[in-house]
Image (cartoon, rainbow, N blue to C red; front, side):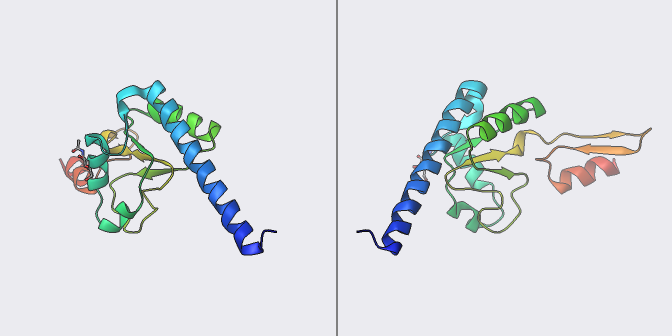
Length: 145
Ligand SMILES: *[C@@H]1O[C@H](CO)[C@@H](O)[C@H](O)[C@H]1NC(C)=O
């Protein structure tokens, strides 16, 4: 007979395995779709993303892979795959949110917006468009020039 706490541990373990499997499957699909924009642990691209946090706590999480999209189309394709595969993901903009799990994630995909950082202004409509990976210093400098 399985006691309650053992059952919880077993179920927790199964869910853990399932989420890991889902994330690995999503990373594999994303790699097929978006090729060189997907980075696995130990690779240079993965390391660069993990080193780009404001606090060290963020790196307590270990993403299954890191995706660095280059366009809104890349992000849209990735979100479809992530939702279809029931995968967890995080969005890393500037990487300034200090606690683990905000911009980073374990057993999921970290979407690193570093490459989407353009800033533009429509002067007629007085609207500024800012990429999700833009840092405020870049944005302020652009707007002041
Ligand atoms: C990335 O970091 C890991 C862990 O520190 C290290 O083992 C690996 O060699 C690094 N990869 C590259 C390409 O620098």
